Amino acid sequence: MVLSASVLRRAVTASAITAAIAFSPVLTAIAQAVTLNGAGATFPALLYERYISEFKKKNPDVTVNYQAIGSGGGIRQLIAGVVDFGGSDAAMTDDDMNKVSRGVILVPTAGGAVTPVYNLSGVSNLKLSRQVLPEIFAGRITKWNDPKIVQENPGVNLPDAPIKSVVRADGSGTTFIFTNHLSSISPYFKGRVGVGTSPRWTTNPLKGRGNPGVAALVQKTPGSIGYVEYSYAKQNNLATAAVQNKKNEYLTPSIENTNKALSSINFPANFRVFEGDPSDGYPITGLTWMMVYKKYDDPQKAEAVKKWVQYVLTEGQELNASLDFTRIPAETASRALQQVQSEVK
Image (cartoon, rainbow, N blue to C red; front, side, top):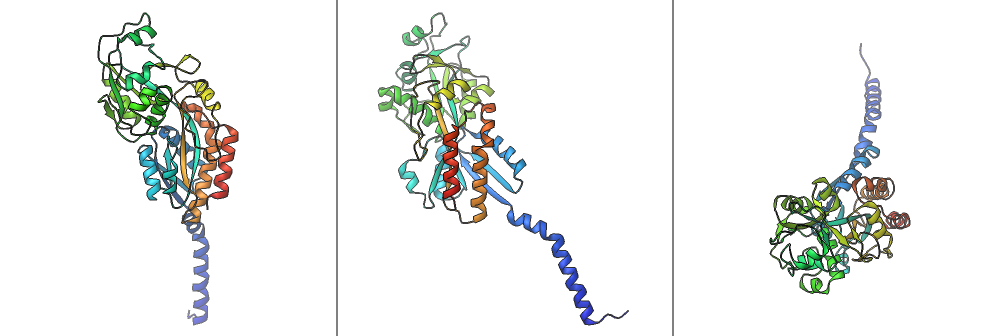
């Protein structure tokens, strides 16, 4: 059979249209697929992993990656523009925020407890007062059987052994929460060590990278004391000290006690909170933030960020308690979500 040129052209055109229709859903899906890369705080890493897993199930077109490199690293990478969002347990300073040329919004995502953890054979119920805890980490109390510790722990067999402190090797929001509390209750600690993600430790401490690194060092070092995010202490079965709050209660971390502390905090318009000694509940309680840009070069990425934040501040909050984090108060979460939806472009 001989086909005319016009018939051939019609056949080829029809085939091309059919192929385009067949492949158009695939092409559309590829065009809409977005990857968001984040980095920062180790404090909420377990929670963010859970957020990401559940978010992906409902939003297969958006892939979220998060590297737990420490709060300091998260802030630096956000300022450098090499991530799509950052994570920090230390609220960004005005100076840091001014360095972000694309603008930045701090989104509170969870509250959590930092707990002193220790390794003392035969001691399971250690109490540390508002006077003693700062002096241990400032180097003023150096022995476990120091009279100040003995007085708070009657009947406890405390050894005549040196205290070996363990701190973070990396710039850390967990360290910020811990030192912020100790500085709030002790002028001596504030003047000698100070508040920060990488403060001036004076005890020649052992240093571990991330919460897992500190937990591992405490676990294998008799006579040591360190500080970690509570879920790491729980996962590694580390002994946690009861610490004294403003009401003179000795408390260990719990969702109830951490919620009490968080509910006593007032969130300003920019959601930055620096409170180091809450009026109620577990005293070493802090917040963690996601930091998102106000401007993105890719409109699809901006929409993906809004979708991600919306999930975290709504459905995601239901997951917080399962990993020993507190949820953000509903009114605060609603305000933060409104700001992201209106200002992220």
